Length: 342
Ligand code: FES
Ligand SMILES: [Fe+2]
Image 1 (cartoon, rainbow, N blue to C red):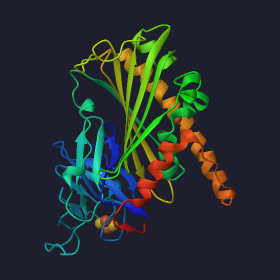
Image 2 (cartoon, rainbow, N blue to C red):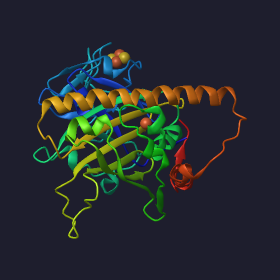
Image 3 (cartoon, helix red, strand yellow):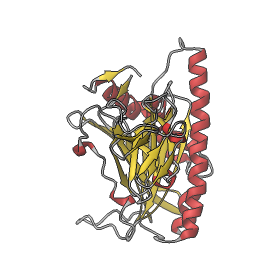
Image 4 (cartoon, protein in one colour):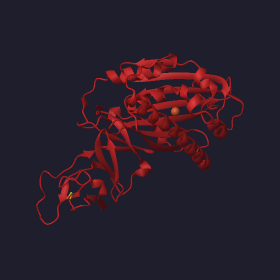
């Protein structure tokens, strides 16, 4: 069951070349590629002739040519040529998906109707390269989206699962505040840690040593977008009354949660920072560390899902730290959207 009338992250911009990328999103096979002029296009990854994956075809100019018998498609998905005859069959078109590039991420509209651009998440930090630098990546998890939502809404796991990189004791012990905007379908979780240990993730990049104030303000926009506003500052220095916060370091930690098929999910991530902008060494450090952090989550969720499948009858015990995750589960469940079997 998928919520289709939403934007999902389909790919990293760096993954899209003239050689088509095949990706299964919400159960549907999609081929994403650039034409030789650079236009980004996504078509159903299924040739209407005999069903060969179009992602195994070749871009020629502004067209994609099927790799089996040469049916040729334009960027709208119209079949414009078939070998051996002048006439092109009327039923040989394929579905085109609307895609939008925003910095390091490519979004795709999976709804059956026209795209609703008012629902497209805003990610200005990935685009404003003058004030922000970013790194991005993707992993696939053999577990459903709900487990990734649980994971991201309860960051107390950082203390244990990500000990030594981003986890410190205070993440687990600092109380959270949870807000649910029932109208806009947004779940917010706030954790403000004051005068706490600075983990390597931030000490190596900000240069701060000793204690720090560390804020984690989460916004989850179900189903597929999660945004963590991280604020790192010397202790006892909150933002100024007018909102100016130049003495702090800010990082936007973005996740795109994109169901694939059979209870699997793509875990797209991006880190954007307003410090060390343009510093390639910091890019390399953060990309390496975040890749490792994400892999720790992937490994944990894979194990968790396998165990849950083997023992589905085992009940959960929820506690205070789960309030954000439980709120997100409820919002996801209640979303008044048409659902379609994969
Ligand atoms: S399967 Fe694509 S042209 Fe035959
Ligand atoms: Fe994690």
